[in-house]
Amino acid sequence: MKLKIAFVGIILVTMFSAIPVSAAGFPLSGSSPEIEKAVSYLKGIQKEDGSVGSYSDSAWVAIALSAAGIDPAGWGNPSIMDYLKSNPDELIGSFNLPADLARNILAIVAGGQDPYSFGNGNDIVPGGNYIAALLDTYDGSQFGIADSINEDCWSIIALSGAGYTSEDEILINTSDFIKANQGVDNGWSWAAPLNEYYYESDPDNTAAAIMALTCAGEAASSTYIASGLDYLKGVQQSSGGFSSYGVENTGSTAWVISALNSIGENPLEWKVAQNNPVAYLISMQAGDGSFKFASPLPEGYFPMPEKMTGDSIIALTGSSYPVTTENSASTWLWLLLGVLLVAMIIFLWNRTARK
Image (cartoon, rainbow, N blue to C red):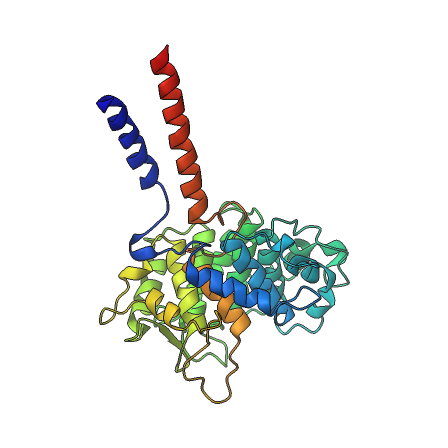
């Protein structure tokens, strides 16, 4: 009997050491109160056409649902995926088409659907082929405008989610472009340093660049990522959160957490005066479950609760971009599988002992 207990104990220790749960409750699971409240808020504002907020908000929310272990294709009737599939005309007049196409690809992949054939499409995405539409914006070394970086980061991330690997030339070339345009402050901006509107790096685009480089096969220990992390540490606020253009906010903090998730860094260990970005992000959740952009909200800024809530769910569940159906299983599923495995081991052991 003692031998049996010891054997089961060894199995339990081995199994649970593989479950992706960090100390102090991070990452949160889909059943965590904070995540459940956030999803409930989003469900409460879903419109009759399946959308949540704007067209772009709906894509980010679909990604967040997948990160929380919820199938966005079954969320609402029509679902949020039905809404995205039926409204490609919202892409007409896009200010940054490659970034918008990349965002949609991320949502399609997170929903477990086919980015090569998602709906009927239109002149921008004929036949619903969002991958082909994105590739049409590639010039041989980067996507979209040559002195802008934001869309290059998200294009790599989206193509990675769609199955492209670090061996694909398009990811190699675009990651080289991103690395060549790292700022002298070691971060990245939305624009290349030679762009006449370039100001300085910001946490949002630095986080996106780190995630993109990781998707393109760059090691977390590489000079580019390591120096990018140094930049982020240097601009972290005393609250534990992050600020862009003078405004400490939820969106910047959520993307930084997701970037840390992508390279296996524990955001709980990123402390300033004992404050960390996870605690800051949770503190930005309102009573209705939504996440505020900033508190107080500066004049001229929009609260953006739909996107902020989506971004926060992704970050707090330990997820990074791209979120796929393969990597979006929440912690409770791992625990359930663990319990089933232990029950099977005990059952087989008892059967063997009786023979």
